[in-house]
Structure formats: C-alpha cells, structure tokens
Image (cartoon, rainbow, N blue to C red; front, side, top):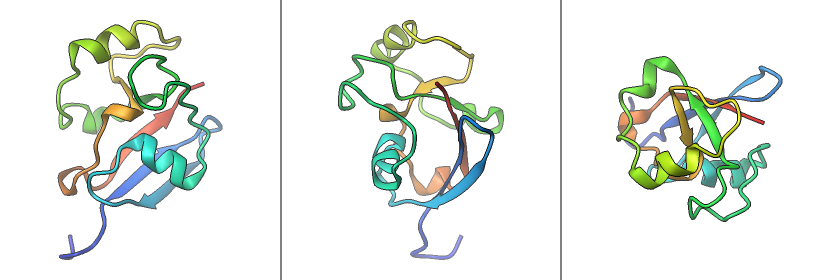
Length: 107
C-alpha cells in the first residue's frame, strides 16, 4: 500500500457486477453505500434493527473481520439468504488492514 492511499472496497452487486471503491478508513460499508448510491437499503439508519444492509463477505476476508456481536447475530437471524459469512454492512468498519475487502450485496 502507498502511504496516504485509501483502502479499497470491492462490491459485487445483485447482478454479479464487481466494482472497486476508494473509501476513507473508518467508514462502514453502509457509509460507502450511501456515498456511492449502491443498492443497499438500510431502513433503521444503522442501528442494527432491520437487517436490510445484509452483505455476504468474501470467504478470503471473513476471518479478518472483527467477530459478530451478539446483537448483530440476533439481527442477522431475520435475514433471508443467510450465509455463514453474512454480516450487516452497518457493522463493518473499513480500515487500512481491510484494503481490498470484497462483499456481495444481498436482496
């Protein structure tokens, strides 16, 4: 990584199209979705109440994320298409260590 460069987030949309975004360290996937007008709804505004920002983290990255909280687990139980790598976009904060993180949008 080049010092001062921004981490990249790779998003696979519902149609299978893959796009790379430069993001500010500290943004959540939900923040990026708002900034880039991605098809990732969030009815609760990021308070872990609705599970509409459900994403599936690429297998290569799943173990590199902080573990799910009990609240995130409970909210994910509401999801359709639940996967072992399912996460809430509002709970994944992108850091320099997650440069290149790849997620698939659900729904």
